[in-house]
Image 1 (tube, rainbow, N blue to C red):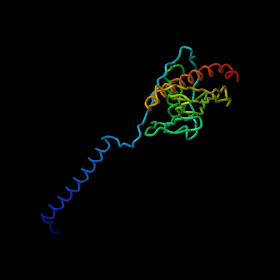
Image 2 (cartoon, rainbow, N blue to C red):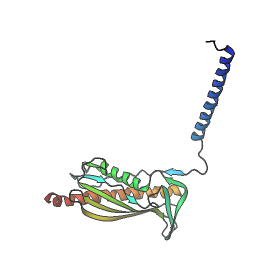
Image 3 (cartoon, rainbow, N blue to C red):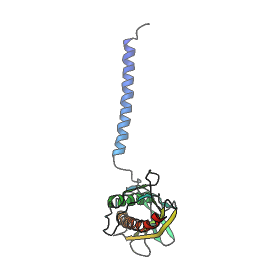
Image 4 (cartoon, rainbow, N blue to C red):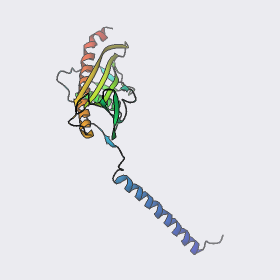
Length: 224
């Protein structure tokens, strides 16, 4: 086999180096576009992070709970932030969206409220493998900024809850929760702050009701 001429080897090396430099330049440009200012038409993503303090009246229970994924209509459980300027009109805020769908935000907030309370030995999402004694079923009916004839909107969350005793498959109790937290103004960040407060309040109410209701039913459950 004849050796490759030195001139050809040098040419190939230069071509390879040139291709490498071109690829590297493209990667650097891509990196700059990611790290640089966002495009004008990009949506601002909001991620409320509500914190709930357990109330002294909450009982300490001995049973375990599974949270069902909150169910909601597509236009309600959407990452677009819904606003109702008039009773029969539903729109969305332009250039803004939630980091998670509302149903997922509600589930996360309620799960953390119960876990952080220290009042229940085990709570987890349905399908997580917890041997649950009760299951909480949630129907998300409203998650919207509602003007309701006012100059500023209120962050409005409505949830229907059912507490199911797993062994008997009996609905122990059901209740509808409604929270409307007025926003400080009409700007989207002010509306988002109101949603964070509303989410914290309704999660606290749901957690307290679940613990109290399940605890009251326990003597009946043990007798069956």
